[in-house]
Image (cartoon, rainbow, N blue to C red; front, top):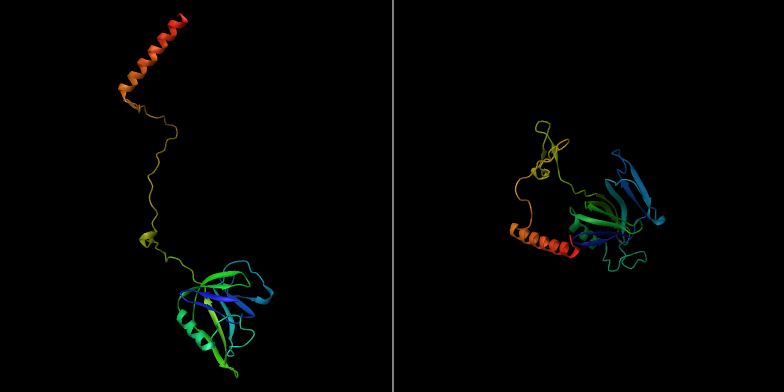
Length: 197
């Protein structure tokens, strides 16, 4: 089952037999066809677009309709028109895959006594990224929001010894230090008297 989930949710009423992954791999144009009935899985780089042929039955009582509440091809195509030009999440249950895509126009025609719709559609992958330009003259990235935060340089300390600091570097108040010294001296004096030295 293939679903489109954006502001609106749209499910293809009949799962297509196969899908094509266009531009799969390197930049050379190639197509990988996947048979959905065999539950094939794919690995590798992302495609540039996903395309497949789909079928919208005109007979609302057909046994092969997979979606409850399906109201016919005209209503379904109106739902697709509402999603056209927006980013949606396409999920393919048979392959356990999900991608962000842009919904474009579909091609197709009505035919048959039930006025079925046979169409094809292609979804380019939506890649969210900032546009960064490189200039050979200034050697800067633009826009300005792509500038790294500067850090303070650490001085070179190889082969150098630390300077001695002057003054009192203690965290304790000098008056408290004197009181503690007097206590220690008194304890040492009483200990020395007890020992007899």
